[in-house]
Image 1 (cartoon, rainbow, N blue to C red):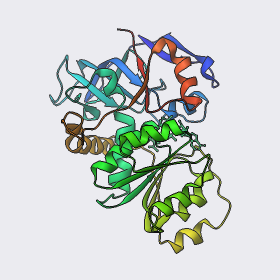
Image 2: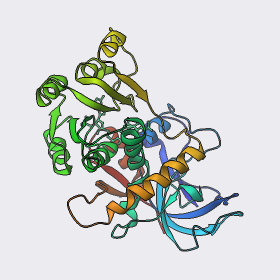
Image 3: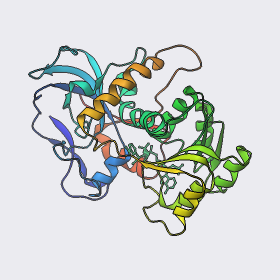
Length: 332
Ligand SMILES: NC(=O)c1ccc[n+]([C@@H]2O[C@H](COP(=O)([O-])OP(=O)(O)OC[C@H]3O[C@@H](n4cnc5c(N)ncnc54)[C@H](OP(=O)(O)O)[C@@H]3O)[C@@H](O)[C@H]2O)c1
């Protein structure tokens, strides 16, 4: 089968399609014939040699995929049958013509969505769901500040925040991205390149601050984050795009707010946790991708690339051009 491959860490120019051995499903696994996968920041880091896959995971890039079940491994519980369309959360291996998946990490395709649209759901929607509900304990009436509001995770988090009865605020680096976030339901957006988002957030909340911050930036935002956090606020850190170093009185500022700093990494969680998350998401959230009406959830697709253009797809994400997800189509 063909799979996205690189021989040495480096830039997008190192990526190419390579003929590799097709995997076989093990105990409790199914084989998925991949129609589409999607790109994540983790793929860029792995390509640069800065993010190894967790032990036992495929070294092929790709944290999510959609396609058809084509083989059942021993011990499968009958949840899936050959020919079923499905989408999957993966620790790696999605950017290939076939991938093996534990059956509990597959989800049905919501009615009305295409397979390329479905490929844009697992990684960022499960992440946003986990950050908001399992870690941030979002409540109706909360205000939630979502950084990188037009990212894959951000576009999902805005919609899930609205659905929880809370108010999403976003930051982003351009007017176009802020407008897209507002169309998805953000109550206000702040261009972090042009204004101090903590001052703007405090003004919007009449001095109260936000109850939850979903933060994939880290270092460069720490002081502004803690400044606009409400008393008893939850600051959920899940990425370090703005660096890992902090210089200044973080502890006293956080302590003064009685704030909680919570960190999260989904990819390296064990199978049991991921199965619990997939089950909760499938039951509570997935039906809302198919309902008619204002609460309908939508995966936001920026562009669909044929996987033969994998270098262009990485360069597009690396230069922060995407609003929502970059999807890759595999040859059939
Ligand atoms: N911990 C986990 O379990 C987990 C799971 C999934 C994703 N993530 C993390 O979530 C983040 C978003 O992932 P994604 O795939 O959704 O990203 P994405 O769609 O590629 O969007 C990322 C956006 O972040 C903004 N950005 C980049 N560098 C920045 C900086 N230094 N300061 C401020 N904004 C910056 C850019 O938008 P602007 O033009 O607005 O600057 C960029 O387009 C990444 O850090 C990723 O690693 C973590």
